Image (cartoon, rainbow, N blue to C red):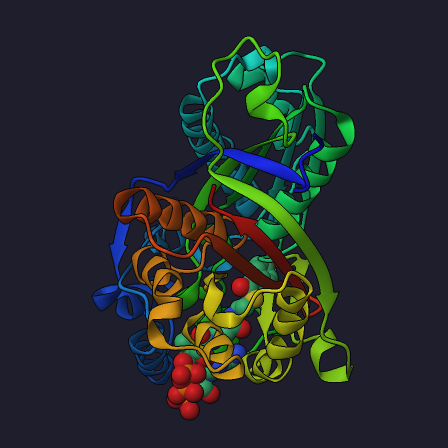
Length: 377
Ligand SMILES: CC(C)(COP(=O)(O)OP(=O)(O)OC[C@H]1O[C@@H](n2cnc3c(N)ncnc32)[C@H](O)[C@@H]1OP(=O)(O)O)[C@@H](O)C(=O)NCCC(=O)NCCSC(=O)/C=C/c1ccc(O)cc1
């Protein structure tokens, strides 16, 4: 009998750079190394104290910025060089963890898709990972740059659509990697100091990977021993918040000074105003309710998690996994929601939570909204 769900997530991997940075001294360290005036350091301290972040992992410490001469504050080429040095190794670490957890044979991976917003390269990380991981040279590869944080769910959805359409032998390796630490700004005249401080405060570095397979994976004639699915992908929907305020509320631009991330102060209230209609529409279609699902929300910032909680009238415990990942890793962009899903799966294995359904939700430039309904088998 044909399975009714789209695809199976059969493995998840995560990785961070080795350098752990505690948030207590973060604002001063950022301010001192970037040459900020005292009032901006105070603002950075205020923002860090409200960020809901306890620690994060950074590949490029702020000291690297202060090592550059003041007249040569790292420009785009320097930042892209830093990205190239760090991104592929971190992505490889997450991908290897997922492959190991899966336990299958490398030549069975049919597709690889890599998402990254914090840098740009060609040949892309897709081809570089094929070589470093030793995948077949005929692996179909996709390099999807410059999407933003909603790409965590977008990547799972795309992999599920490929796996569903391309047949039982399909194994899609999806990798997300962000080296946000090479994008810290202080001197770009086109952006406000407060925006620079918010961006430097809430973002960190990380990578995640998933292996997504056709629903009949465990019963296929694969030479690998079948392993239980982590999640069944049941449904996925994309939408965006329309209107003049939201179109430019979250932006990423490539400038001479590096990548510019712009976050308007309106982002949390825009999400709060629209998240209920999007979420209830998706869940009602599957005869689910807010209380019958585990909520996995992209922790884009403390105010984003608050906005979802307020907009959907959720209890504190419904968002505790998103807040825990924000506290332990910060907003790493697209990989962050995969860290949150992995944590949910680990908790499920440990204590068999009663809820089998999962609602995952991510936001990015647009304001794009990506929702996915999964089931813990
Ligand atoms: C932790 C924050 C920063 C502050 O907490 P708060 O409860 O809002 O606190 P306050 O309202 O008291 O604000 C503290 C100060 O920060 C200022 N502020 C407060 N948001 C702002 C603000 N977006 N601007 C510029 N000043 C501000 C605010 O004006 C205030 O300044 P001051 O009155 O002088 O103390 C909180 O607002 C927060 O979590 N904001 C982040 C929300 C957000 O847009 N997240 C991104 C979602 S989308 C995503 O995840 C990825 C997108 C992405 C995009 C591009 C890429 O390249 C990659 C990825």
